[in-house]
Length: 85
Image (cartoon, rainbow, N blue to C red; front, top):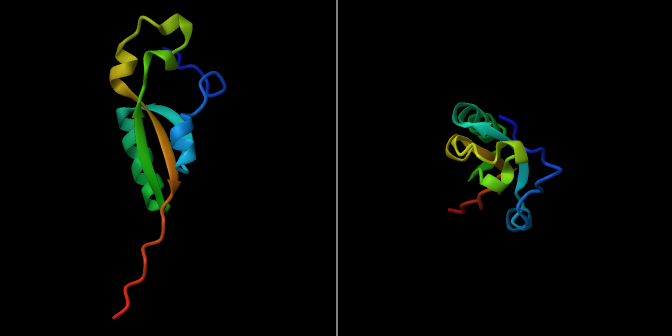
């Protein structure tokens, strides 16, 4: 299966406007590993389902990808406000 490169399908503008950066598309196992890694580095992680339009033309009939792959977005975690006693 071939997932179309980022240049063919740019990140979702509404997520970019909220500070999210598109990283990559991955299967569930890889996405879980990446989520843990990015969280450990201080990032928030958002997973978006893959849509049929995210697939290359050759793979439009492969609906399995839309069920098992996600697009991973990250943004720097906002610091928590300090609590004053």
